[in-house]
Image (cartoon, rainbow, N blue to C red; front, side, top):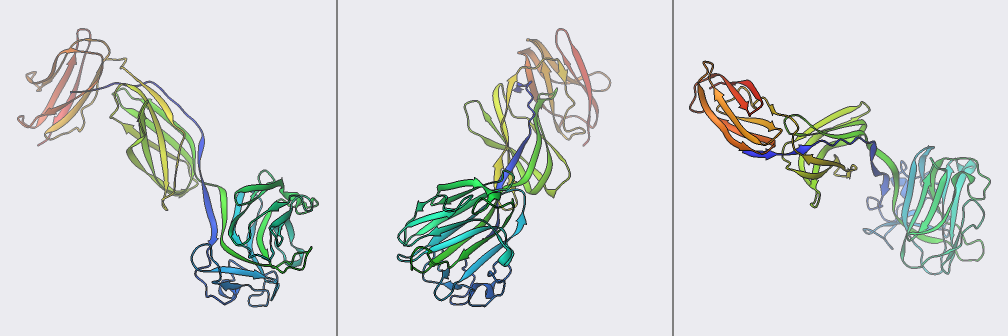
Length: 414
């Protein structure tokens, strides 16, 4: 006989499973060394003039690479070389453009991020100068707004984050924040466009010296930082009258949602998976889910959902807490399965201590089995009934204590 003591706690909440989604990436390994890039891919990359194969079209190089064996050489001699990744004029959301840059000693580097890419009519959000000698500066909300230093002859991580919802942008070198500014104000503080339109790498000579531009560019990524695959609108835990913890949750939208794992931990334990529910894939229709946990004992527990995409990414919901206590009613549940052959399970609850008897009778009132007979604490219980020695038919099972009696029917089909 198994005793189960369960919860009376309920928690509802609103939350979102948020992932960072890579919108576009390129490590340049798929291209031929010594051939101009946009001749090989004029869908994701273009030049300032928009014409592949002109003198401004940069070459795929094997001189240096951050990953693999290839990168893109941006230079002003011969040149200038110019490379643009156009972005579809985003006006909402939060995005990160990241790439690796390698500048040999004695040379300059330069890039900009565009609010709008339209050739000579383009609008700039920012531009960064990497001067020969390891100093740099950035036009962001004002001219030469933030000086910085950088290392020659090494691959640097360059990041620009643009939050269009907040109209705010940030520029990082090697993970260090160089400047944050109001994005729509653009390079010199006179802009008006809260939009993201592209990344531009350009062979720009140092305006202060005679050193030419030459740098290598690798592992470009455009990342959507607010991609929401699953919008969770409710997450509730309750207990039913037969001693099971019932977990219900709902979603407003889902994108690429493979499944939910239901996880539980005790107050001093670690989370482990207790079940799975398939997701709805991609949908804008509200979805409702339920899972029943039949395996807890008395104590405090925590539940959470692990949402998994088809591509293996996952996120966790907030956790909900439940306190497991004893039952409050005298109750006899319907056996399961029913009909059965030859074994079925019977759950019941007892609200106070005392003698309890659970018996099985045939339809003429003869007692054919006694499953429980004796003293019992209050609680939820479950017993198994094996009717292999009985003929098919309808049977009654009765739970009785000093103050209460309940009877239900079940059917044996052989």
